[in-house]
Image: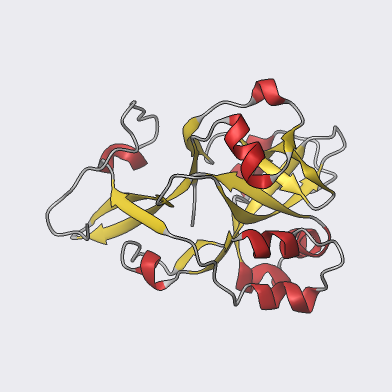
Length: 232
């Protein structure tokens, strides 16, 4: 599962990379750690409005839900959905067919289990550019967007540094992004897309293992910290 993301890109960098503009540009701020276990906003581009960058609450809610986000997440964590399980989950499947989005990040986090301890890794592009993860979303009655991250099978690169399960966020390259946002894409072609892998130049390094503790924050959170016995 993926509970934390990172987006340290400047607004103009994101707009240039995705050829889209922020609806509310003054709300954008760099965030090295976006904690999905708290009510957090992430930048998204929806199939409905592919030239605009909006904000969505991470953790999808049913369209008719009117109670607090936190209450729903305590009952059912909706930050992620595995691509091979979407068909069995009406909340996600209906959104997958009708409301797909790009989730804009500069990195995500994985964990390596070694001798009973979890060691976090930060995964990012070689040039630290923003990139897109596949997401699905709902729009609530009050106009707020809520979204979930789609997970796929881990590729060979991620599998070396992420050994406690075999999933990773589904990454979209430029071609995949256009197809993911295509409102006319039918369900068969959507699921075919999950079989493809983005050819992007990623890097990863371990960070301080205190990262996964709730409430721990520090300025150097993304800096490398190497430990004996785990992959470098």
